[in-house]
Image (cartoon, rainbow, N blue to C red; front, side, top):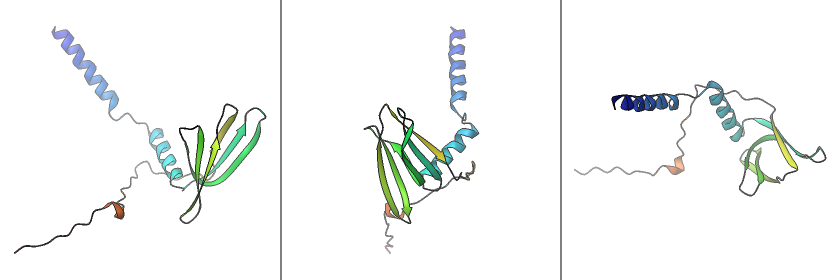
Length: 131
């Protein structure tokens, strides 16, 4: 019985060790690059290709954020000026593929982190003194 308890405890310890702190440096850098690109700080090229004919059907170069939605569309939000954005929708099917290329590269610091307080989300507090 003691051997079983020790074996179970050892398994729990091994699993706990595996789950904590196992992020690789490349994972952190990849995450930071994706974050910079989604914040419109990286120039990228989007190429949508008809896989049947091998012909490009759409190309976009600029600072943009990209995601897939639930209706099999590629949502591309482009920053075209200070505070000015445009949104493009590209329908994807079995004959459509796309490639996103990082044109400008991104400087990311694996040790950098940032905390942002959005003023519109902070509830104002009034302090009163009662004598």
